[in-house]
Amino acid sequence: MSNLAVLPILIPLISAVILIFFNSKVNVSRMLTKIFSVVSLGASVYIAWQVIEHGTIVLETGGWVAPYGIVLVLDSLAAVLVLTTNIISVAGAFFAPYAGLGEKERFYFYPFYFFLITGVSGAFITGDLFNLFVFFEVLLMASYALIVLGGGKVQLRESVKYLLINLFSSMLFVTAVAFLYGVVGTINMAQIAQRVQEIDQQGILTTIGILLFFVFATKAAVFPLYYWLPNSYIVPNPLISALFGALLTKVGVYSLIRVFTLIFIYRIDLTHDIFLWIAGLSMIFGVIGALSTNNVKLIVAYNIIPAIGYVLMGIGIFNQAALSGSIYYLIQDMIVKSALFLLIGIIVYVAGTSDLRKMNGLIHHYPVLGWLLFISAFVLAGIPPFSGFIGKLLLLEGAFKSDLIILAIIGLLTSLLILYSIIKIFVRGFWGDEEAMAGIEKKPIKGMVAPVVFLLSLTVVLGAGAELFYPIADSIAAYLLDPQIYVDSVLKE
Image (cartoon, rainbow, N blue to C red; front, top):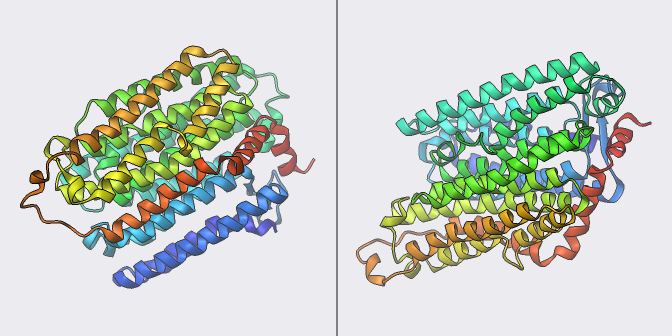
């Protein structure tokens, strides 16, 4: 049973290696990508069911007993995030043939696609901080390759900025891990959690915790460290933007959740209060960015930032209702962000521009696109009965329980502004006279729309089926609030 923990890493890794040999055979690569992604999704569904039914799966690789060897830990949080990652991977695999990649498909796009999934899954599953750094580098190296595919001037400029920011944060990451090892003598997260309670160097540990927060906050793109994200995420192909928007920042968020619910929990009055301030500012400045532009790609990219603020809000409040909301919101946001980036990519393709001022009347030729965008806006803003509402409702409940009224009001107002930022694309771009589309050739979009429908259908299911899915999020929150469960499962004490 413990060997199941390696499958979410092994399947995409083997898939990537196999696809290297078929890089020049595009049709074969497309077919294999679909098959491999579906197989990986099937494995992740089975693994998630096993974890939820029977508890955490721990794999001590090479027979080395924890904490001495490399440990993979598939707990309920990691399992649902791996499952969500593979759902997005399947949607991307079926969207790829229609994504307009062209010659990019022959330049090892599909191997790098699976290397990215390997790195993301590994980061969710690893049980020690150094291997978290390693998997970060795996996914970042794959993302470096994906972001430069195409080689345009703007793309090159933004990819250099993206590369430098992530290299700097990675350097700080490995430095912080080295400092932490020097203080506690281990990099195994379960043993670190155990030892930070025993040693009398809380000042140094708090400093290391803040340094790690800076690293993960940079990768998660929270205020004020989000400046690198919007333009970097809109220059690649829409499929690559969808992967980045749905997965890369979320690995940073996951790292914040893991580290600040397991290890650095002895100065909640300091660290988690900082989280609350940053969460509120991320919501405000992210939505201001979304409202300030007429570039439809940038509108979606900026909306990543307030979403991260909502998740960080739950970590900062640090009660069961708020953490449940963070988990629920994180999962649905990964799905809806990937759907939105794909959808906006299709809209830009059919309109021939990303400038909202130059769009009008699209609803007459592409009604399905218009109503999918309308639904996406409601999901993103948290309007009932969609999935975003469940997560935000739990976050607001947690905020009111902790008397954080102002933060709750910021959350509510931000939701309304997020709704407006997406609805304005619908109103300005889709509404209008049919004459606005006169002389413009209608482009086929059938194959492109199916993955978007698949993803948005899941957000509807997450909302309508809240009675089924909420207990899972609530149990994960209860688990996170008792770090001793994680420690005992890994160290078997």
